[in-house]
Image (cartoon, rainbow, N blue to C red; front, top):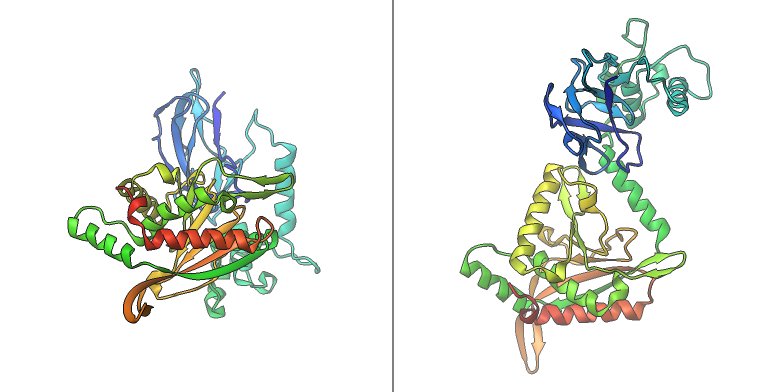
Length: 397
């Protein structure tokens, strides 16, 4: 019997994702481990591999790129020797949602029946009796815009409210719908505030030598590191000297990091994403720069995987390009600290009996007061300021 190709959960906290395209064509031979299709989850795009072998059969009504698909939904089939034609489990409900039909030999599980019943119950508004029905996509859009769909007239054949009916009134409300990524970011921000006791320390580092060093890279040509690339290397050195800043709070005790993997916050159209650079102390500056550029590009393209945004022990975030000096960065939970980097400004500084111009770099360190007190955090910040003031010995290319 054909083997169904279904939507896996992939560690998401939500029950659906966005279909991002097939990686195999209809009729292709598939082996275990081959990549079959792509799914966009909460904050990343995952390539889904096959655990079985067979010949891929993609139904004509298989989901298109951009369609929302539920976890467990059947997308296609792997035909085994002797299979002539696959079952036809897929249908589109007119609103673009992929639905799973009952397939002989593949009865719905109790969980699927409960989920289906829950979806049917959700179609009825709570607190009042209504005979109106609404499609899942229309209901989702109504929730995003805060629209009471029970007051709308549906244009479906049985009076069912469709997505177009909700969209017709949504623009007049002046509400921007929340994307799944935006909702995930918001949920993690709330989790960070609930699970940590954040305190922010601020200080200014003398970055004059750092600015000169970057100027030398520009003169030499080739890859020119960004200031955040320099700081990732210097932060790694400081973390090695102050490992408590890379620890995590657990119910059984503080868990120290076994490797210095640092996240770099990247602004994208979808929201703030944090790819993680692995083993920063072992990377040369040019290699580190190439990695951060590649990860930042892929973050803006929406092609990062969940694994590439997990497992960091510390995060660096910068608002320097926007002229911001000091700010209060939010801890990337379950990490215990995050460094905010401001804009470098040349200011007059008293040097003995002289007043000279020096490049000053604002730093904002937010740490979890459960994990450490203010003094260890202040010592880390002091070490980092010293490294920034004299960076050359620590920045081997």
